[in-house]
Image 1 (spheres, chains in turn blue, red):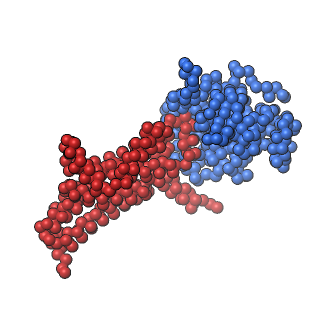
Image 2 (cartoon, one colour; image 1 turned 180 degrees about the vertical axis):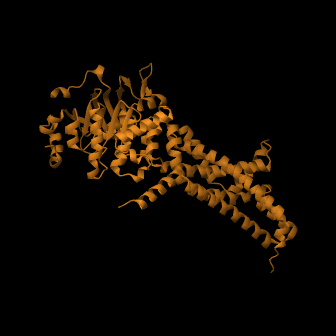
Image 3 (cartoon, each protein chain N blue to C red; image 1 turned 90 degrees about the vertical axis):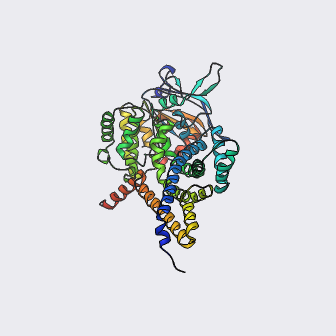
Length: 269
Length: 232
């Protein structure tokens, strides 16, 4: 099934990343990333810590401003506009916010708004960002919370929930914006082992429904099952881009093989 | 010596009026000062150096000079440049600038205490900077803001006694008037101290109630109740 490895034709890509660089001061975190993602595609990004995976994800919705290179969302450059002279400058905040609203994000540390109930967390952005009427937002929130199995926790505060429950609410909150793409930044890394499964189960459901997903993860079993493509990053570059069978059975690069060896006890059968 | 309570009772209307003036001056200046403090705090957190510079300068100037000197500068120096100014206006301006500088630092600290991830989540959901501030940061910062703000409001009330120097008829000035007719400093200043204490104690109690009702505290209470009732 190596066809999945071939990047989709430019015309059909929902995300196109073009020579992306990111510096933090003198630290060169992303060193020229190129990637295309087709609508509905599930991509898992794996690699050692410090390889730039999270930064890559945060550049995709402009939580980090790329130092160089461009992310195209549906063919439109994200966060920058080119002046007639050819110089690029930051796009207006309104345009950036509008594009961000099309990309959902789930964080390692959940980041549920602590002063709001679960229900308020989910209806907040639909009401105040999308401008949905209250009744519609409420119905949407109820449906989404039911979907992640937490309808009974609607009026609890985040601090009353387990980590796994919080992360499922965070997924519902992101879905409430009806995004075209979902970004997951190590969604299970902060969870107790016995709570990982419930979150991955919600994510599998989302994948089955055809959502475009980019998942930074250390859950190799999940990556092997769900991903159409595995991106292996190290030191700010994409070292290997393979179908999961290829990546886990016979990785093309030495570094990926070394990385996978550390997971041998958890690798998929 | 004998403590003559009639010094206080017979001059009660004068003292009460002084207390009233102190309350009005402090209320007006606190509200104006909080608005000023919010603007200065946001300017200081801004990405633009053109906003940050003046904000830092303002805080430094106010914080590093005595309030008494600031009051004199506003009351005596402005008229020298042809700006006529009443004691009332000068007093309000002086207290507002003074309060605003200190409030701004507390507000800045409270904003910075809101965890970064809370704002990331707001921005990722498409919220503008202003909306994220209003819906996420401000409600959460209240819990961090109220304790230092209580200190500073109490400080403002006590320091407002300085305004007696420029003839604002507030509590300290009223006390001195009583002193001028009765020559009874022990009674007069005891009464003043007691009234200042009563005022600041009421304020502290009020701020305590306010803290109780912040969204953060409400969430914490419900969580505590939930944990207490949980069936382990």
